[in-house]
Length: 243
Ligand code: UDP
Image (cartoon, rainbow, N blue to C red):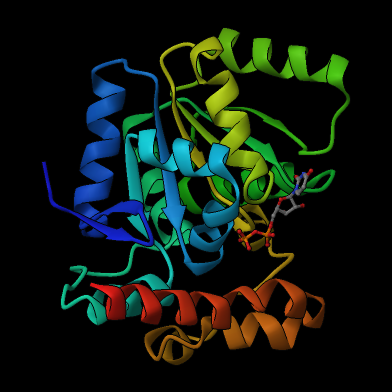
């Protein structure tokens, strides 16, 4: 197993994209129910105030270093993550591998029609992907039971859940063992990108750790959420000073 770096008590595995993908398919090959979370500064800050989320992240089978903030925080502690493994890139890497292996994939979450549009684009890119089902992320309590049955009875092996943080992590934790042997991953806004509804930041911004700025420019309503970033910086600084 690879090493783990704790960022404000959230244990994050020091894995490369390739290693994360290998772990994921190991779980699938073993027929194990398993969960992957993608930690960024916003999620780590949520976990400071949300004990349920903090426990879920401690129990997850794999937590990858998603955000530029967690890489920076590790450096403040004198540690280095091997590389950034963003949720959207890891989801795309798993989907590519799933296409070549014909692994059964289910896309759950996003606004009405978004998971379907993402599925159409994935089939266009990868040819005959084995996408066994899709469902939007806005549903009633009665529909939830049917969604769970649908995911299980269709033999889903990879379930991507796009309900936003922390709803998706809590949903996976609550239902993982009702879904059959299935690898579950919370993917946030990934279907918005895969469907073409949202764009990713240009490569140079990603490489200069400025993806947050691009998202803020595109969606100014994210401003409130981004207040978590200076709080994260302050919390990391004070925790490293205390050590
Ligand atoms: N969403 C959903 N159901 C909900 C709340 C949110 O399906 O009850 C979806 C929303 O449509 C969006 C995704 O969850 O596609 C969250 O995206 P966001 O950009 O907030 O995630 P991030 O990538 O920042 O984690």
